[in-house]
Image (cartoon, rainbow, N blue to C red):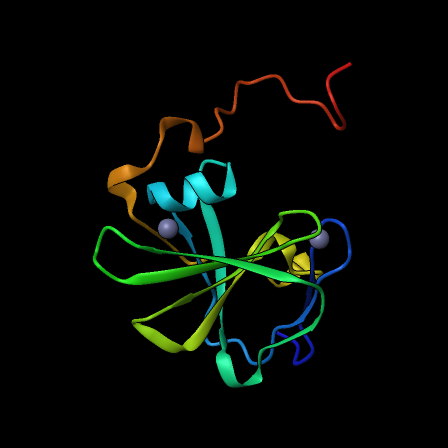
Length: 137
Ligand SMILES: [Zn+2]
Ligand SMILES: [Zn+2]
C-alpha cells in the first residue's frame, strides 16, 4: 500500500490520514460489526496507531465489550454517522480503519474472514441474482 493512505466519510467533514498499514485486513462477520455497519459484515484494515491521524472532522465514539471479552471502541463521523475506525483494548497500537471509507479502493485486498460462526447467509451474493450497472429501474 502507498504511504499516504487517506480516508473520508460520507459528508466529507471527516478526513483521516491512515498512516502505516500493518496488514491486509479482513472480513468480520460478528454481530457487533453487522449492527454497527448496518451491512452483512465489516471489512477493516489495520494501521499503526502512532502514524494514524484524524485531520478534520468531529468524531463520535461508542465502546462495547465484544463476545470474546475485549473492549472495542467504534468511531464515527458526527456529521453523517459513517463508521470510520475502531480501536481495541487488546491491540492498543493498532487502529482498524473501515475499508469502505478509504479513498483508494484499489488498495483493499482482505485476506481472511473472522467470526464465521455468526456469518449470515446473505453475506454471500448469489450469482444468479439479477444485477444492474446502476439502481434497478
Ligand atoms: Zn461525515
Ligand atoms: Zn466484528
